[in-house]
Image (cartoon, rainbow, N blue to C red; front, side, top):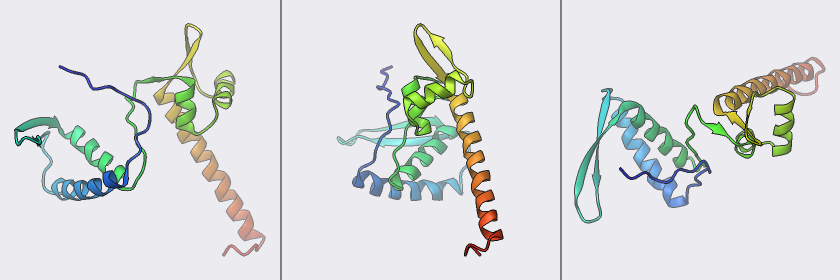
Length: 157
């Protein structure tokens, strides 16, 4: 079995990718409404006309649909296994912060990590847990600011 090269770098769709994904996601969306079996068959038609049918688990089919939806919206995407360990640079990119700032978060204990030789590694799960927490904290602050603005009659009705 030949393994495809894996990259944690985001894939940025072209305009042509976006248009093809819009069509593909519409077709799959219609299919989702009628079929919910544990496996799906996908037919691959090569440029020379050869065809091959591939069985994939339904969860992979769902991921394919979600990928097409994101590409259809022109969004960059990447797939990372949940148990993946990230470098500080990869974790910083996911959080949209600088690597030095992420290192401060690690040293302060806000995000757990472990050492591999001289390098720090962070579990993907821990990065996402921190991201969810910080996003929730930001929403609380925004809600409080909106409430205060309304209380002070600052034109936010």
